Image (tube, rainbow over all chains, first blue to last red; front, top):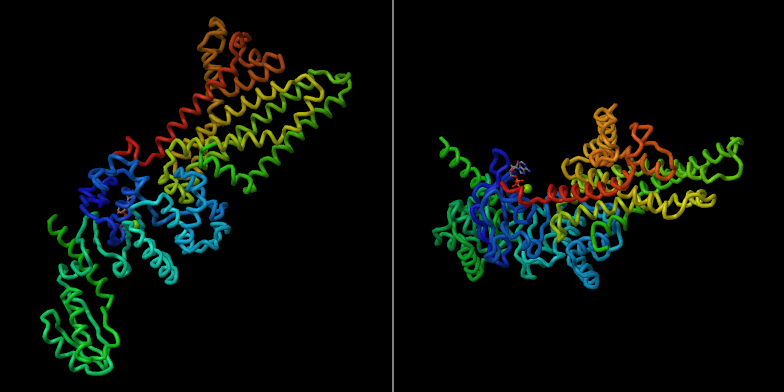
Length: 315
Length: 281
Ligand SMILES: Nc1ncnc2c1ncn2[C@@H]1O[C@H](COP(=O)(O)OP(=O)(O)O)[C@@H](O)[C@H]1O
Ligand SMILES: [Mg+2]
């Protein structure tokens, strides 16, 4: 378990991180979301031991890593938002250098490197020069590098930024694989919808402070913002309408041709009940889901709310 | 050698075109100066009555001077990018993440620039065979010169690495390294001359005078040339002839260089430590 307590980092007059409190459960995939300049990178750098906190503690299994930075090197793998590679090294040599720098014995390195490259789908590039890899491949190589000390906690700062959709999908697949290895993964992004399929929990940060934290559903409900659900069907749409009208969480039903849209402010459990009922009543559902733009609306709303509160406090 | 940075640097050293250019240019320079002196000696018949060991020593001293100058000039080119170069390439944080300590990183960088210098001056070794062939200079003499130059490479390297740790940009650390390299010897020489001008009352072999001389690279180089050639350049430059009694100035300079290297290496290591004690708050 990771517990961040009252973390503060000041740069001159700016509080990049301003009293952050956060708990991340072991084995979870945690999404760290916030607009640019919110303090995500700063927090992650402190966790990775690349920056000293001005105040506060970060506990990993009850040991404060701010006071015991040597633990970081054992337990944490970190992939920065921007990074470079040595242009005169081959992929295998690149990995070997970092294995060496983590003082991994020579006889264990070959298997380790082969396994890691396999995990990130780069086995066939083992003899290529690092410089010749595409952006997405470099990103994956850097991910393999961050796994070289077999860390319990993996911190990825905006891993999908600057990647094309293909590379992004590939990254997502690899992360799913890593989730199975029982690692705690922390991923930052400034785009909420990008994270929500991947993360079991999300923390929204702005101006160095945590605005909200929990599963997407919880945040949605707390944000008291309805979700936009769509149902596409072939026939028996009128039966679906009857079902929907029974739920108090459903409102603003709009009928289209072969499609019904409605607003919804319940959780996923109720949503699944609706679908089950519809199928039972012979509504031939073709697709059923949530429109994603709304997550982004919520995100903007949440961060704006926090801002207005802040100005109100100041006045 | 267990240092990962050192290992990486030497593995990739010969993939860089720069290495070959540096070695090639230096080898040609040595060859050139040797040829010039030999021609001069042979053509000047009044001096040429068989090979006089004195001529070989003269040649050796010229080679020594050239080698020392090349070492002085080559080291910052190699070391001033040690840390700032990694920063510019955005590989520095990745190195800090590893289990290497910051002094592992600094010493890896410093030792690899020493190795570079060593390889460069060793590549010109065949040229030295001329002086061995005609006698007058022994192999231990040559080893001594190598060691002397390597301690200078270490101290100049450590200062360049210090600038490279302190400033984010390689351009700045390179300029500052060369400025130090040029102006430090000039300033200290002028100061020495000013302080001791016309003051013949101080004993030449006084420790203070010796120390001041030994922290001056110009004096140290003249001292080692004087040691081989038997001439008294110190007398000529500073008007005092017996500063070399007892421990020699170049010997003290070797000692001084080792201290300087360790000091700046340690200082650089603490500068680049992101969570060192001085970085709190
Ligand atoms: N090294 C630094 N010096 C001064 N200010 C910084 C530094 N790093 C970050 N900041 C400031 O701290 C704030 C948070 O930055 P950052 O953590 O990078 O945000 P995010 O990663 O969420 O976009 C920003 O206002 C940024 O300008
Ligand atoms: Mg960032």
